[in-house]
Structures are given as C-alpha cells and as structure tokens.
Length: 253
Image 1 (cartoon, rainbow, N blue to C red):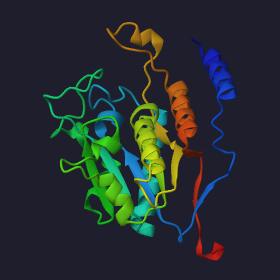
Image 2 (image 1 turned 60 degrees about the vertical axis):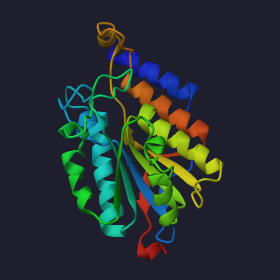
Image 3 (image 1 turned 120 degrees about the horizontal axis):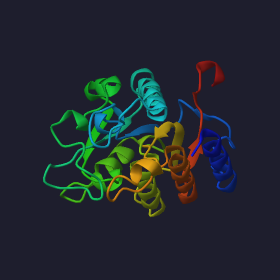
Image 4 (image 1 turned 90 degrees about the horizontal axis):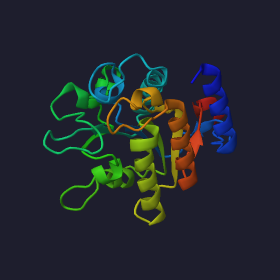
C-alpha cells in the first residue's frame, strides 16, 4: 500500500472511530492533586533497535517519541515534583512461554531492563519497579499471598489519578488500563478516580501485511492503525485520552 493510501486509510479510521484526545484540552496537573505516573514496559526488548525478537529492527519514530515523552514526564514527576512513579518491566522465565509471542524479555538479559534513558529510575526513592511475566500489569502485580503491589502503591500514596504511558498501546497498555478501570469500578482502588492515557507517550510495533504473510502464524499489525484502535478501546472502557500534559506553575495557583 502506498503512502497516500495509508494516509487516506488513517483519515477514514479517525473519522469512523474518533479518539477525541483534544476534546477537553491539555491535561493540567495541579500540585494540590495526587497524580501518579505509570510506565508500561519501556524496556530494551520492546524499544531498542535489534535488542530481541520483539524489538524494532530499525529506528521507529513512534517508539522514539514514546521514549522521549516518558523521559520528560519521568523527570518532572520523579525529580522536580517528587511524585510517585510506578514502572512495569516485562520479564519472563526462560521455561515459561507467552503464547502467541516468541521468546522475549527473558529474565537476566538486557531485553528485560529499562531503556538506557530511563535506567536512572532504578535509584530513585519515589519509584516502584515491578517485573511482570504476563501482558496485564495489574495481574502481574499480584503476590503469592494475594496482595497486589500496584493496588498497594495507589493506596499508600493516596493517588487519585494515574497518567499511563508505554508500549504496546493496544496490548500491555490496554490490558493494564482495562483491568485497572474494572478494579476501580469494583471499589478495589480507592481513592483512584481517573485513569488517563497520554497518547504521544504510547507506541506499538509495526508488522505490515506484506511482511506478516511470510511469517508462519503471524498476524498483520499496522502500527498507526493499531495505536489508534488501542486508544479508542481504552477510551471506550472509561479512560481519559490526552495529547498534551501541562504542570501548574506557582503563578497559576
């Protein structure tokens, strides 16, 4: 498919299932509020060129943009505001496959580590890191005793809203958002009120149909289309979708 046809296809999709991430204007975060930042799987195995089976094979603008936005917001939350940050790291045991995906982010390998621009998070006191061996970070936060690390993080920090970024928009991000919204609606996540997805801070992978047809068992996964669909599904479940994040300055208070 040519570039003009792809643009027309995306224009049609956005018209048929609009996300409306600009409807409410920029998200303005107040120093009076309790907002936590959630980073989903921004690890080498999904983001660093050539790092593994599910990593991009060449530089990817959408993924690069996502990493850049994550660095900016993590710096603001963690270093300047001293607000809580929760980071999921996809990490798998070598003997426990995650069908239908090939082996990826194996524990103890560089694939399962944060991208170089975010490694500094490991040493920050207001950052909680959680390795997960499944797609859904909410389920991946369950401990053997039935407690949930993510739920405890929300409650112990009195978080009223979470801002979610990461990869993949339509897979790990979406599954986490949907489970979190269900838990909130079931009264499990008080005082959490809002789940907010930052669209430029999310990304997914690209597997065009002409490539997928030559890979046994692979499904086509057009990047821009699936990114948009992921955002649309998240909004349909009750998440807020925003395309700009601002921080209240002292002059505005």
